[in-house]
Image 1 (cartoon, each protein chain N blue to C red):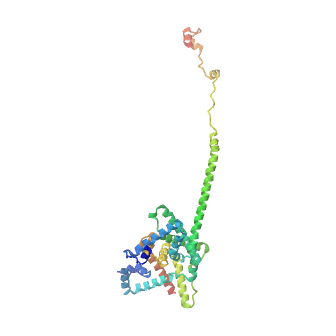
Image 2: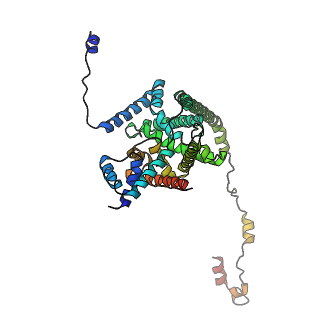
Image 3: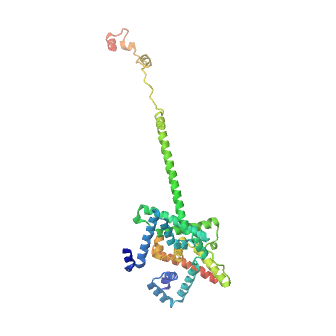
Length: 212
Length: 159
């Protein structure tokens, strides 16, 4: 009877102040709950955790990967390492544990950096070979644009490490500067200035190309 | 306010990261500064070209395996850890058993370690000792003071 009664009722929803910040807190709490659930044997919880963050991790990994399979493997390793790190800190002191999402981003950034270094050191891949493949261009304008894209993406990978990290976290992962600063352990202003240096460099590369 | 004050803001504008107040300031400046307007345009173009495109359908197909692959990766890692732990415990148990078995023998061997003993004391031979001793050689003449031994002096020596 209670069920029938409840089914007819509409939930009494209230809009709480805090907006985005409250949503972020709630998402983090959910992440930690899913990690805890997986630790006690709920495989579906881990699946949900991956589905929730796969877009973010893949957006970081794609920049450094040579193929979709490469990006997927990088993302898988990211989830594995982030989970192991989260489990370790959660076991020590749950109150001071680093949020799972922050582990993910840090691990993704570090693994991508190592991946790029290994690609350049061992495979001797050229920068322009890195990155997702697209439909081949046809026509002079498209060829010109494709060349600029190739050159600029290569330049992104040649940026100084910190500039590259900030730029890709903003450009690819679309993170707010507050979160970028948190993840990289710098101030928000430092993140913004670093982003400016990176984008100014890309602008100069583009101008040189246009001048040719 | 100079153009330099807008440099960082122009990059943030291109990234879509300006708050409304700064956005209004920047747009006000760009409206009458052609140099900054050109910078803003080029920065936006550079970032647009550097940005990765959305994943293609072929990429999405590959990425579909990600949740299952990640879960399998965690399971494999757990299995490796469990196996390593099992081997470590077994190695520890073997080491403990070996130590338990070998301890008495080791301890015994350490008890038989050569001990430096002092040479046994022997009773000295008094005659040899006496012969080796340099006895003060008394000159009988000095004692007597003449041909005949002085009985008093002799008596004193005898004492």
